[in-house]
Amino acid sequence: MKGNFKELINGDKAVLVDFSAEWCGPCKMQSPILKELAGEMKGKLRIIKIDVDKNPAIAAQYQVRGVPTLILFRNGEAIWRQSGVASKPQLMQIISRHLES
Image (cartoon, rainbow, N blue to C red; front, top):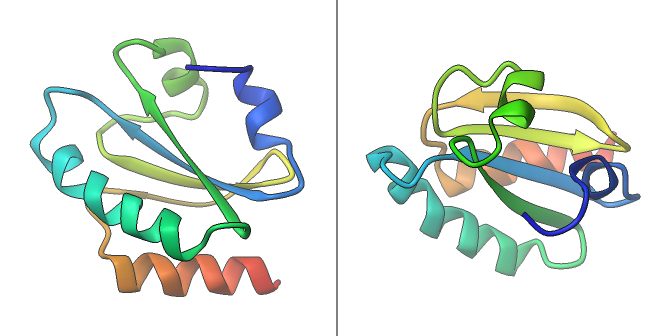
């Protein structure tokens, strides 16, 4: 992972963190959805991927028990989280709602 995780989530832009693992089938399904989302939300949202096997301390800090787990951060605070695969329409709705507030 490039950069310091705290710095990445403390920026003024919302950050969606994808906690995943290379061996995880559902994570592989989530990945293209997040790529599409990143293209559509460019400038409004940053998406980063954290491999839980390579970054166990970060996964433990945010109590990630299963993968994929998505956590939306704003100004360093977790404002939404979900475990399991999320569809693009679902993510667009959730992110839009949290970015407006």
